[in-house]
Amino acid sequence: MTYSPHQAAPSSPEEDERSYPLPPLPPGYFYADAPSYQLPFRESMYVVEMADPIDRYHYSVKSILCSEKTAFQSVVIADTYNHGVALYLDGVIQSAAHDEDLYHEMLVQPAMLLHEKPTDVLIIGGGEGATLREVLAHRTVRKAVMVDIDQQAVELCRRHLAEWHCGAFEDPRAEIHFQDGREFIAGDDRQYDVVIVDVVDMLDNGPAQRLYTRQFYELTKKRLRPGGILAIQGLEFSINHWKDHIALRRTLQTVFANVGSYHLNVPSFLCSWGFLIASDGSDALELISPLDIEGRISAKLDPDWLDHLNGELLHASFCNCKELKLYLSLPGPIVDDDDRYVRFPDIHEVDPTWERLRLVRDDG
Image (cartoon, rainbow, N blue to C red; front, side, top):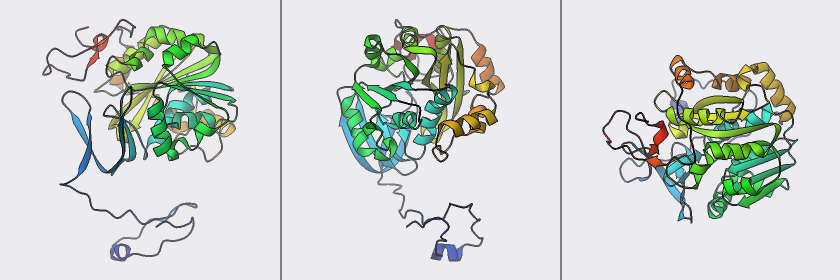
């Protein structure tokens, strides 16, 4: 049961027994009854995520909304207890209802805010439609082209994740293609102001790996207008797992003059997640003040559009501890088309992990 803004919820037996008063809420907010369910600690359904060869994460779920195998990947959409409805591709969580807006705002909005007037935007991946949703929130956008390799997965998201895409697929400014992203860019002669890459992680030797290489970024740069900006989801970025992100950063630095790393905690990912933004002409976002960022938000977006991002959060997301600053400065190899994932020869060595690129291994 919910109540309209400014309307007090009637007291319940639980509230009557509470030994402390509920705190007052600001205008427009209200209390609502929590969902009533008992956690099934024994006979429960779980979605199991194989985070690496050692760790497995169990997400307790109320129900499985769909579970299908497409031509490219397995797709599971499940209603979890802690994170709401969540999308899993090949057993790896991609986004969840309780924080997908946080992830997608941080992926899309920095580049869109940094560009003076983005009119044409290209999205590689983003099958849920939430990346498209965030792009189309900008009034200056006249065309948003989304390219995803897996039409069946997109249709499942379109059917089950309506609260995420919010009808973005039906927006007349949206143009949807079902094709390999790299092949599309190679054959597309149009120019874009912003390109956003929102694809699955580099977990195997599948088609997504070719969207993280120097050659792909060189191809993408040719599709950018002067002053254009590239934004990508940059894998986990924390003091425990940083090599993959920094390998991508080094790779981008061979192609673009300005590259910025930023990160924040995404609860459903169970870690700190990294993002990368690259350009030849735009100022670095970390040098723009929170007040200036707030001004750009006010000028470009409706006042109630963003749920999380503000000037302080975005500015702070570029700040790093001493250890991460050291890692960001380290030299090392880049991601190239010729690199392939190989498994660690000894699973018990220091820093065991999933199948990784040769170039981000300690032994080179």
